[in-house]
Length: 235
Length: 132
Image (cartoon, rainbow over all chains, first blue to last red):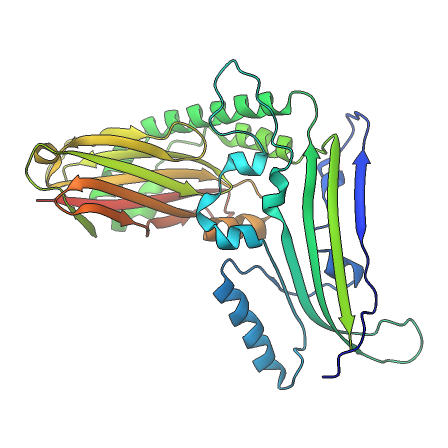
């Protein structure tokens, strides 16, 4: 393959402030997750999400193998390097950007830079006609993109509300487990009957609180600094 | 079935559970006498929605030998779509550490994972036979 110069490099930095608006829907809240794929208007059928370096390397190796050539037909992957290196450190508190061990009655500050841990890299190999003319000329493109949340400031009492909801969820979950304790005992005695015994669990008590937590996490923040660096390189 | 040799002495056996997930998690540890029909006894539970159980003493070796320690974790997955929740379910991991028994410190990392069809709620089950 004969490498050539960058086709283009786009650096987008957006710092957006929005006014309080009660009509925001969840659909409004989505941030583009894969800058490279969006800029190239490419929608690979399968965007792989390897969770280990080994899985990533294996995925690329397999796509080369399947292409019967020096350039994969179509391959794309997106992953978070921090969690790839530190897979054991995940928690809902990190996702929500709040402290885990907050004391009741204290002020619960947001961790406005917590989004950095969720920095994602997206990479892909595409064969695409980039020029809108009558010629059907496929260009081979290798792309690499970075997306990170530099700063995320939530509205008002987000952290306090989140702490309360998380405490409420945990209390309800423990209450549910109390009621299922006999079934847990049976599962302990007969692990092979787990599927059957799970059907007898009491109805979930946490669904409503889970939805509230999900909505709060996904609400549009007051300020959101997002860094996108897509780098398509064409042959 | 995993095993941990607690011995027969008066040493207090400790347990630590570390759940790694971006979902909402709650854990409960119970001790069960598999040879009888008596209900299991709850010996530890998580303190918050991380599902982690900080270091806790679950009993003296002589008292808990020949019991089965089962740790159950309920996880509500909060991804917006099926694929996101499925991926998070597959990527969640757990570490269970026991120490102070004859086997000294031992780590178990392979719980059985179950979920509903929509990957909205998952369960982790770790069963460890406490032998002597």
